[in-house]
Length: 398
Image (tube, rainbow, N blue to C red; front, side, top):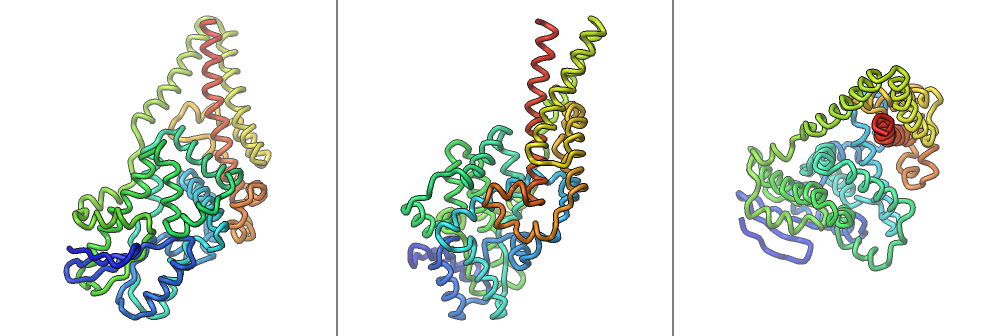
């Protein structure tokens, strides 16, 4: 492979007889949209490759895709946490895009449109977003997840006003890269998964495309400018098939976390046993502490999210039980009940993208509210577990 620099955002790579024109775009730049239009209109390319995965591509071409989302099924499959982080990231990006007056990812959408109009082969080369998010959350601790999520939410609603200098920086770079840079120092694993691994993955996809049975001869590859340098370096030693498969795998649940969860459950149950051995009164006092503290705080969390009364009652009942079982959380149970009792309306899906950027609407939009119920019921149960556990130990040794 050989590389030739043409300007700051365009590089040409030759691979197995195919010419790959790698173009770094800014996801909030009108100039990037114009550059994409100019490149495709020239008629020099027989393939356009875009920084999208299949799921994001389908969401882009099907604007009404949200309407088909089965919220109840999301909770049944325990994907609520992933979707919640994705929604927060999308809202954060949308807020930044509004500041510069360009729809986030407009240049990718325009590339998809023009490829269809001109009957040019289109390839999506990014890793599935759900795999990326699961790999990210697997590599960071619970408290880092909380810090990342709350940091994104704070950036949406109470973040500092974006300076003119920051806006200009966003116009000439990759917005997701800019977002990740804010967290990379405190959480380097976030950058590794969201940026570095995807640099390798997209390079591997482009190399694989050049070596396919029916390879295109002239590929226009559009990626965020923040990926440009990483991908150029990766072309010198592209990932092999085994590495691509590894990067495409969803991580298995941590056994350490599972053991820790079961350990907490066994510890609490052993405290009940010790309490009842000392006296029935102490045993029942410990049991009541566990149920009331854990259940009340989880129910309070659900109430903060304006959950249905039956969902609040479910939180009170479920939290003391699920806290003893690490394979299921109170938030999942409460989310299932809430999504069954209050199925989001079509209008909630239609206004979801806009409602995500206005915090008052989080409690009014049926789609967002059910995830708030999930989040706050879980948070209340988690806090309740530690407070109730501390109180139980104090009663036994105090």
